[in-house]
Amino acid sequence: MNSSVDDMMIETRELTKLFKDVRAVDGINLTVARGELVALLGPNGAGKSTTLRMLTTLIPPTSGSAQVAGFDVVRRQREVRLRIGYIGQGNGAGHSQRGRDELISQGRAYGMTVKAARSRAGELIDSLGLGEVADRTVSTLSGGQRRRLDIAMGLIHAPELLFLDEPSTGLDPQNRANLQEHIVRLRAEHDTTIVLTTHYLDEADSMAERVIVVDHGRIIADDTPRHLKTKHVGDRVILGFATEAEAVDAARTTGGARSGTEVVVTTEDGPHLAPRLLTELGTVARLEVRRPTLDDVFLTLTGRSLREDSSTPAELVEA
Amino acid sequence: MTSFATDTRVVFSRELRPVVRDPFSVIFSMIQPLFFLALFAPLLPGEESLQWFVPGIIVMSCLFGSSMTGSNLLYEMQTGSHERMLVTPLRRPALLIGRALKEIVPMIAQAALIVAVCIPFGFDLHLPGALLGLLILSGFCIGLGALSYTLALAAKNKEWLFWTVQQTLLFPLLLLAGVLLPIDDGPGWLRALSRANPMTYVVDAERALFAGDVWARTTVEGVIAAVVVATLGLVVGVRAMQRSD
Image (cartoon, rainbow over all chains, first blue to last red; front, side, top):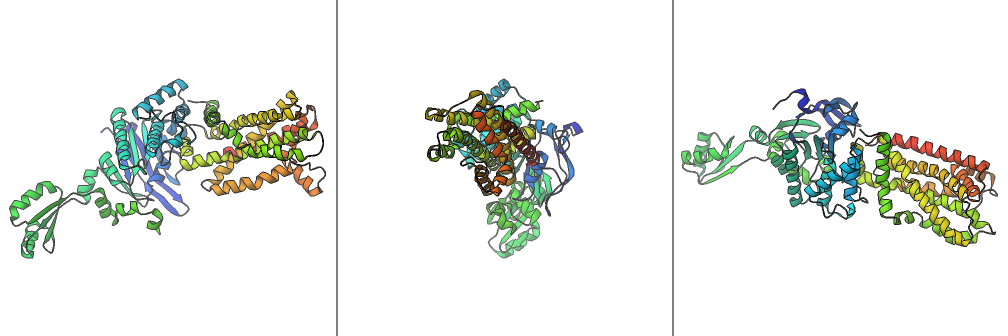
């Protein structure tokens, strides 16, 4: 990967946002190269959305700086806005408007001619499967249809950098999979740089090549999902034995941790280690290989589980 | 690169589109003024009462429509479309001015409807005066609309705050402008309050203009009042929009 200055889509230095006394974002240094697909992963209130809102010029940083698509987010807002697309948590299309009209207005907002905006709107309506609903009032569309319309609005001007804030929140699993497919395809077809926030582990895991784990306004890990898992958690091979004596023996040979008749061996490569242990030890009665999830990574890094957090209202967690 | 005028036009036509697609929304904000016209005007004494009452009702209809228009923005702030527009390169002042300018269209449609309803009952229309009256009213409703949007931006996600302030101000403005009953015979303090209400001058100007009295002091005062309200509204509105996130 060429990492010359021109190829940096995002570069922040000690980016910080204070809301009264709360450090929502606490000195984030982040670089994203052209063409990357990056997920910001963290619990509610971690500072993901606030970071995104600063990068998209919606709110000014309290301190620190950010260059987005080559321009400063405070001093050159207009240049930044011209080059980015933003799909927020809410619905971008006005509820009393029609989808196609909103797409055309959106194109006009970026300086496209009516003709160009109309033809681009038509393309996006087709490629996102909105043909049947594009000329209906937005308030009559389903959640999934509205979300696809949001994506179309964010893409109308073919931005080089696209931000998505919790794109799949509130969608059912099928629509979520659908949306992820669109994002991945977009990336493959247009080489768009994509930055998204999510608290869905599977989403970050399956889509992003790079996951940035954010907690309490700070970046606590930044790597590929695979590396994060091997580096911070590793695979676990769980061996079950008939007697404790056999387990003690096995724990000594493998260096694993024993509890009762069970021994847990931590490794970088469980699937290859497991059959070897099976033949070497000979006495194994039960075997299980557990591969880590990003939640395990989060748990190791913070002592808390993301999964619990995402199913609990933010107020309760913070109280 | 777009110009400021293009930005404003994009916002203006976007705002106008639902109104054109669903003209019933224009009538919706007129329901109360129409009730006053039907159920209150007949109580007024004198032959000329309709001539006196109708211009005031046109201003009332403009007040009702323009003052509640901020609720559209309030709703868009809740759903996310306002945020989406803030991230586009549209200039912030255009986001407010385009919206405020749109208020003129329903206002003119409402005025035309009210006049059309009243002509069969003996309302006498002096067209040149009436057109000048609508010009003054345009300035007034741009200002009111801008103030309503400012209120929406200030209320943010507190919808109740928007409606409380709007409803609290609506009737004092209306009554003190002498729309329903003349203020002239009221006590001194009431007349003083009325003179401090810019809408009073707009209503007086409309009455004179709709009666064909163009070259009058009231016209000048009406123009001044409308310009003051428009300027005030746009200045505070643009400032609020600049700060919006």
